[in-house]
Image 1: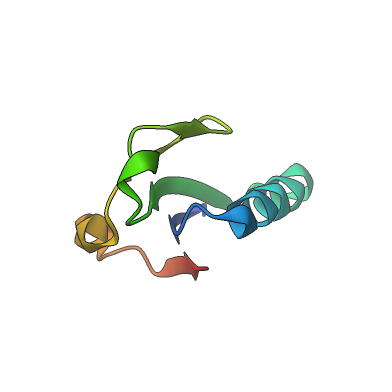
Image 2 (image 1 turned 90 degrees about the vertical axis):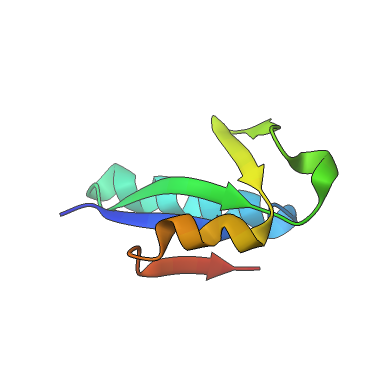
Length: 72
């Protein structure tokens, strides 16, 4: 079963998390990033590695049923 992940924060650590998830999935598909959120308005709508920063962190409540959150 693939687990869905929301990443909180689109800072430099985002790249490391994204690469780590790709490495894990290369061995066995386990994770799917379904959202990236950051309070920096200048990042909203921008795309990083095919993932779009959705909006402010307060909008994460959209994914309350998702258990895996990566906080930076």
